[in-house]
Image (cartoon, rainbow, N blue to C red; front, side):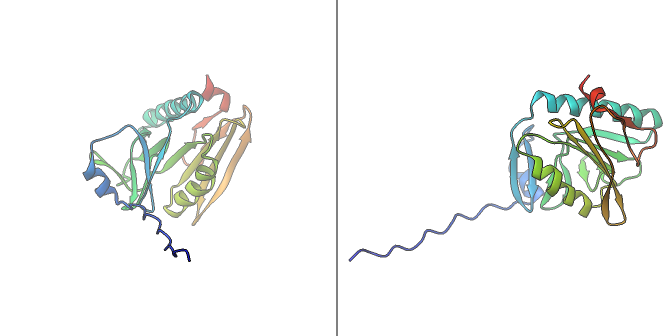
Length: 190
């Protein structure tokens, strides 16, 4: 007669708060986010991704600076939405007067967020982060898809995002939050 073996329980995942994570180690340039306390690490982006991020950030920064509207940041920089929800958007804008910004870090909700979709991050960026940013009431959410040359601009209308622009190719995508700010996909690859 063979012995009956008990199933081995799965090892519980370590769930973190942002403050616990910060207390455990030094600053890092690694792309890390907290999703309901679970630490999510991502590989570094590809060159085309970074080109899109940097050129979008430059265009946005120039617009924001010229009009003295606030501050523009790029990843990696933690955006602490709650104790167990921390993201590192590719690019984000915080308007003057938004209490999310301090010299100590970003604790609160940016006004505008951009995510460039990477291979393997389509669901996370297009669905999960959209829902998260909608839940926390980000005013405008931009998605750029390098594979389709697409740009989507979503604006918070009440409690839900509405797609204001969904284009592919080299068509102008304007902001509804920042009048006069617009980009084209081709311009971001230049």
